[in-house]
Length: 277
Image 1 (spheres, rainbow, N blue to C red):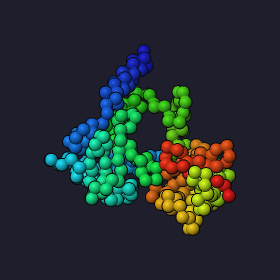
Image 2: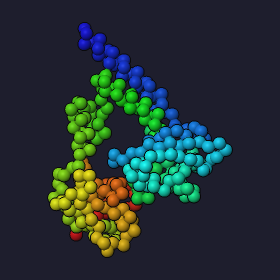
Image 3: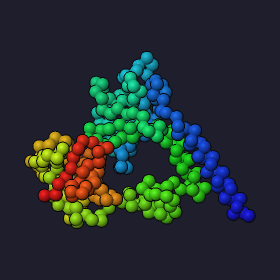
Image 4: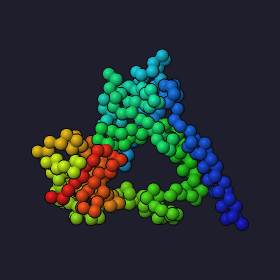
């Protein structure tokens, strides 16, 4: 009887939290005016732990030269913010981070789930931006759900999972995968639109790269501007996909096709594949 009552209370708490989150989940981010967009925002780089919280300020009678404030650590965590000096709202209700002279750095647009904004960087990397208050409400709802005995389905799973299975899936996703790295290691010829770039990429499984990865190195003679800017320094296998880490920290993902080529995820940038040499 006592267990049944506790279960009902847990369900009630979970439903309440779900309703609380649901009230905001369907509402689009209000980018109609600087005053409604101003406040604290959390920015992150997709598939990494790199995050930054900064403050967007509204200025009276100003629409496109608005001040912002961020801690010094933001520019270390997300180097793309190094030259950001102001923000503005675009004509089609986008949120722009600009250099001091107005040059666009990142332009964030409404995401499909309607509670965050997303922007694509120069190398196809994805940045996410969510209002700090919305992030806090989301975290609070998840904590209530977990305390009530309910867990969110792991992103890579299908069907229902136990807590232990969900925790294992998360651990596997976050830990640097090494299975099959000996098979993947070696030299590769990067191709663009199936054409050889004349460059060479070495994936070394004997030397460690940054943050628990294996070492990746682009041959100095490479003249492909995109690869030179990306400058891969690390690699690992994540759930069967090759993850290349750039010197500045962002990551590109590749999947092996039937021909043995590693092909870059089309959602992350321009066509690029790696052919074993």
